[in-house]
Image (cartoon, rainbow, N blue to C red; front, side, top):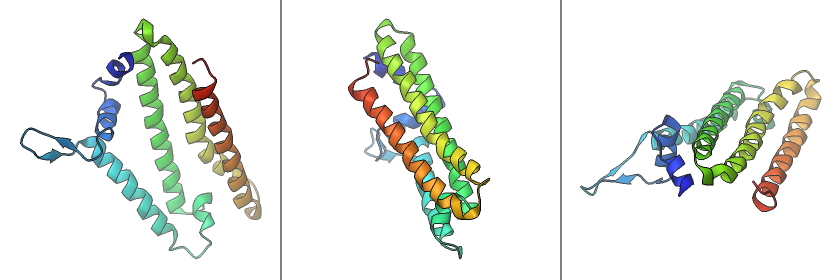
Length: 169
């Protein structure tokens, strides 16, 4: 109940998440289905990913360079990831703040604090890794990004698994 009250606020992020909870639109009284800003945003993000993936295939270099952010589609995907990370951070922080106002929400608030840390590391980790890899010789970049991103994802996934199974938060 406390978490539900914290999620039902009127911030921009809350409106987006409200729309995402009903992915096929909102039914109004006249039997019509309406789509909100969250639906439009999600369709735009999905469309951008598809376009960037196809655009990345038009380059002569191997497809892995898309994941190394060596050309415009890869750099655009990196910025898209940073924007998504910013939205995740804002929404998690907002939910955490709403839960801290209620005495019953203190333990859940600790969970959101750890979730926020894991999420920020995951979202920002890959762009930082690829930026750092640009200082390396070209022949090492792909391997560093592949191995580094795999290790990053494994560590964050292990942290999330700990958070939901053993942590008291």
